[in-house]
Length: 199
Image (cartoon, rainbow, N blue to C red; front, top):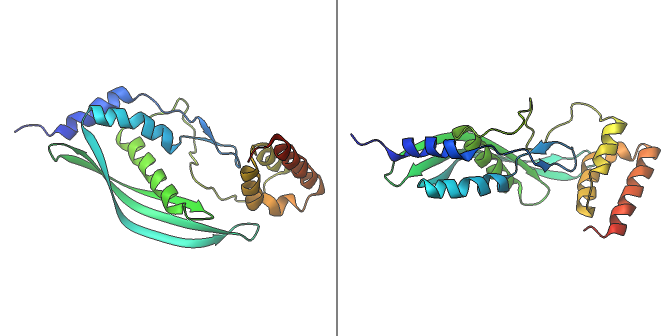
């Protein structure tokens, strides 16, 4: 019996893929992560070379609205997705993953699918990072307690654009507004961003 192509293609891709480092920084919370663009740019040429294509199948979707600390609304979406890794002879390997995403507009589903795809690829192809961390918070995280003043200053400092600042305020404004020193610090940072012309 002829061996199914997918069982040769996946190990061949694993041999060539190398690592995908955590080179992206979350501007509000300061952690490093691997972005969907890094995964796509790394995977696409290898998938083409070895004749593998990927077909997603959404099994379940849950969506709800959640309030931010400042009283705004975030749309929370969770997808349960099966990814079919297929070769041209019809052979396939499947991976079932869950992706979660939050957004204040219409991108929560896109984010959930991006997270699900990343982790399907990470797990099927065993893609390492340069440094393995204990936690991998590639998505929104929930603070268990009030952040310290030092943490809030870091969130403020990490804002590089007006949009970054607005998102930071939506998440942490309730803590900053209650502290005169932090409020002044945030206002100064905002003025600096506006002066620099970052949109």
